Image 1 (cartoon, rainbow, N blue to C red):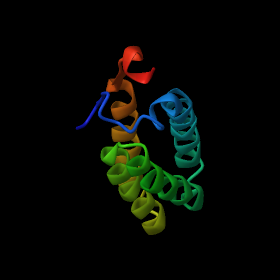
Image 2: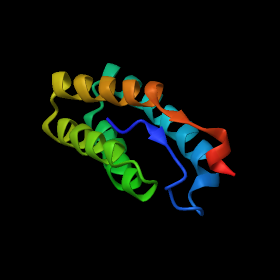
Image 3: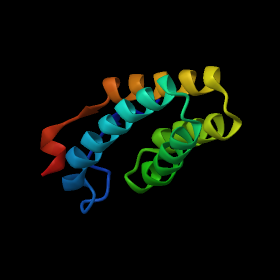
Length: 103
């Protein structure tokens, strides 16, 4: 799992990463709530957003997990949604961004 940010990321993207990951942490909270409520439409919507934004910011893993979350939401599959929401949370927790890489 790609969990490090390095200076190879596009220089215009680097300054946006702290905000990007703050928003992804909010997405994780929303996903957990949506799962509790079995709101599969919202799960699918957030998964779709993750699928699109991950690659833009240089994190293909987020895109891949997002695609799985979207699929789980579309299939109304609680077990699959739980699995990939948990994986997304673990990815965010394991992520390390070197502050020197951002500037």
